[in-house]
Image (cartoon, helix red, strand yellow):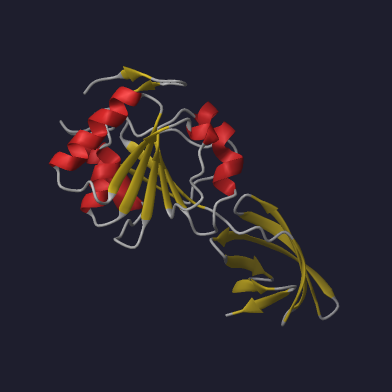
Length: 226
């Protein structure tokens, strides 16, 4: 299968080496539900299913959907690899624990509210294209080879919990400001106001204040340290 026209972009196949690199970067296991946005010929979905995950491809081109179903059947993973013909912007993929995409930054920006609204801890992986204003948590680049000489970098985001607000903690009162997974704020402790910086990793809050590192989770209006 070669490049095919789609609703928003021309579908370009992800190199085989990158398929595996993206799945590895997302740490896909049999416990995961993987959703590929714009799944094309189904290669990422099928590869995820071969790792034991349940996987769904959302693709606008009905010919590609039919082709992917035939390949999944031939590869013996049709029980774990499903494909639907649909518009990714109109689709519900909130059940995913891993989201894969090979979309332009402009399209990712349009999807960003839905992506950031996924369950905290959901892993999002993009082939090559960054998310505007959303710093990746990790990245990987496939070395130049005959299997991957273009579109060979992957970016990973961990969907952060929404934690902005003011909380009580064993340290004192903590005020958190949040920009995606990045945190700034103030710790009011023993009569001192201490600036803090940190980040959210799923539901875990990590921050540094007064030269010390802390890890915490929210419990209602209280920040519990661990």
